[in-house]
Image (cartoon, rainbow, N blue to C red):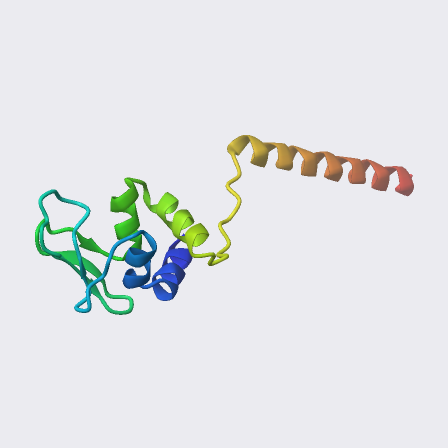
Length: 125
């Protein structure tokens, strides 16, 4: 997941994310902070490139992933998946296999090995 997060930070700028999610970014790179009430002036500063953001009103700061986590109240992996989908990055998110699926695969492999062993023993005799 760290490589995917790194690729997201490299490919999606904070400005692109803010504009995509409906915020008007000023020429100086600021928006009204969505994380605290009563922000009459744009107190959230967006840094260029991979710089991220910092709000001088509430203290929220971080990368584009942190912004999406705070904006949509979700976890790290959900935010990465959302950015991946929203910006059509086509980053590979590995298949999450459960313990039951892993155990089932191992059982199938063991059955095949046992079958091969029996065939091998039958041929030798």
